[in-house]
Amino acid sequence: AALHKEKEEAAAVAAAVMQKEQEEAAVVAGAALQKDKEEAAVAVVLQKEKEEAAVAAAEVLQKEKAEAAATQKEKEEAAAAAALHKQKEEVMVATAVVMRKEKDEAAVVAAAALQKETEETAKEGAALMQEEQEEAAAAA
Image (cartoon, rainbow, N blue to C red; front, top):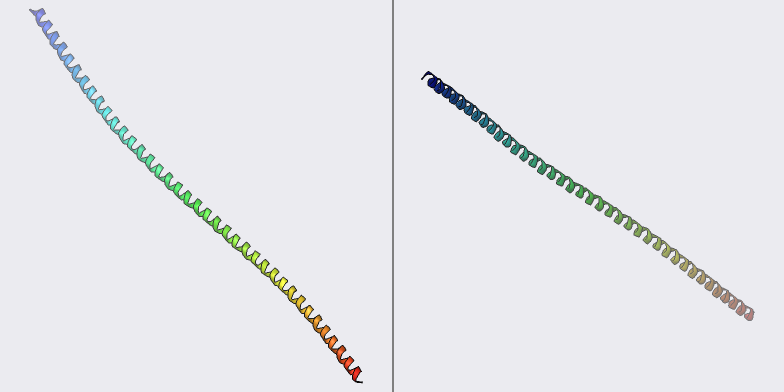
């Protein structure tokens, strides 16, 4: 009977030890599960932050590209305006050259006409004087 009682006590102690080990294992497993859940939540937050940072970086890049494009467009417009201004100046210079040439040609034509007129007047005057002298000689 004593042996039977010892066996029962040993069995009860073994059962209590197993019960305690199972509870501790459950507590450890629960803590590990809780830790895993927290780490997963942190990972989700970190992932979200990474995505937000990527979106923000993409927006900044897009804005910089737009500004660079605007600057490039302004440069091209300024270059076009400068080219147009240069063309206008070239046209003005060419016009001035043509006008000067036309003025010179007109002056040459006018001088030639004046020269011709002077020569004709001189011839007429000489012929008239010759005629008057001849009439005067005839009268005398």
